[in-house]
Length: 171
Image (cartoon, rainbow, N blue to C red; front, side):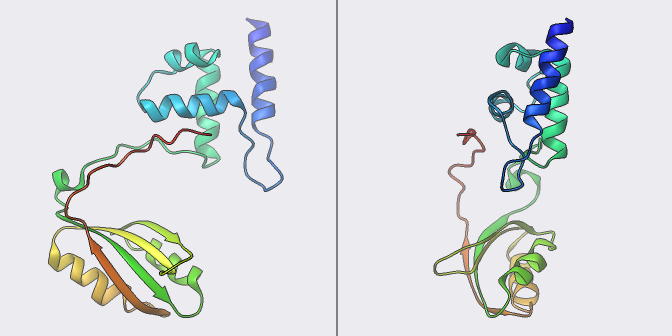
């Protein structure tokens, strides 16, 4: 038991180091824990521990550290249609001036679920989830287009979601 605790502590110390780019260094055990949770976010810590070679307590500590560091989140993913949101769209946005300021303002909107600054035809892509077409129109026309720096928008309304996964692993 003592040797397992010492091994767990030294593994946690190795795992908590930051890499040169300031991001947390993730060792093979932490990556394996993440993959276990991507397969099933409700998998018991004891089962994860068995799969990765740690005790339940060590897994619990590792998971908490990964959450605290912002490496991962454990959330319930819903189908927006089943919880009252009938319209989803991806909006491509072209910006004049500070792209980060516009991205920040979009991130503050509750309907905006995803914001990414891009290279290519658009400066920003933003995914929005709305109750209906009127709500979608209001968000795009009165709020997004009204942001300082927004030059133009192009909306891609979702007709059907064919695939949505969070299983890309940890490479």
